[in-house]
Length: 401
Ligand code: SF4
Image (cartoon, rainbow, N blue to C red; front, side):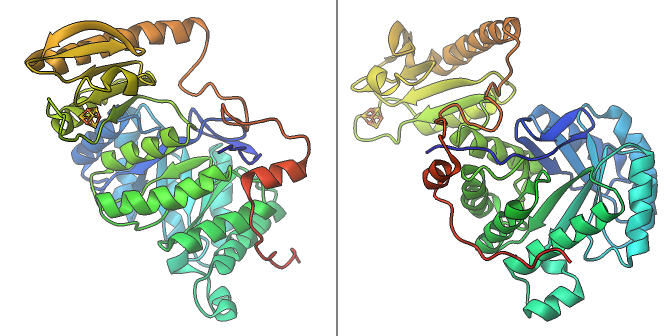
């Protein structure tokens, strides 16, 4: 599969670039009310440790706004304020945070949005225009009868056009629905008619497993079509899980190479070690490693080294002792009970060496050329490109009036 990223404008949220040739960033949202500063900061630290690159907090009332100056100075990643209904919260939050999210469907009359634009402009920060299937404007609901992809896309385009009319372009856009088809079509429609960076997500996707699957299907499809510049996986679970799933989606599509990619065999009658426990332990104990490395855990040596050829390093189980291998070559035998500790030590050394190597060449975890994945072919013309990524026909929305 070849992926060509959609060309978009680029905005800057704190120190994170979004859109253009910037890596697709992973974000999440805290759960405690921000006025519980201690709990909010604890969760922020856990998210930062998991690699979360942007963190959003809900700002539902004045107490939440008042807590923002106590939270922001302790963060190492940009802070985004999520505002619904009361635009006055956005005016105050803009003085502290790196980006403000508003939903044009529930912020009220246009003059309120204009005040928010002035506030974000005065503070030099961008806006996220976040439309949502559950809170579309009345006229669009009347026009379409119920929330549809077309209604979502039209709502977002209307908001973008209205903001452009007052000279505002420092924004990213999201069009969220919990229905995977609707979200995909809404993002697709919008992406055909606008070049603003897109925050993608399937809203209220569900529990850890259901939500991860729904998000993988929806976001995976969009990303494979080159759509999406920053993403949040919405799970009814610990937000750290959202970050893990987000990176796994990006790693699966080879759009990001951050962190350890654990390969584990499904096991069979030949298995000699507890592969499931070991693979889980590896993911947990190596969660702090940011260096891109593929680590393999195989249940036996029958096909062990051969099956692990794609890995940078790995282990294969044996009777009483297993083997440690690197790049498909045997390194040494290791007693079974020491396998996991030895592997983790070796991965940490390897990560340090690779990190030094990447730093010396000025590369990061995403050393992909702008707009293309590492495997992208060069297209001779746009027809070739269309064929290669299999674009589908979607009706065009009414032209801008
Ligand atoms: S590596 Fe060994 S245990 Fe694992 S699936 Fe293959 S043959 Fe079975």
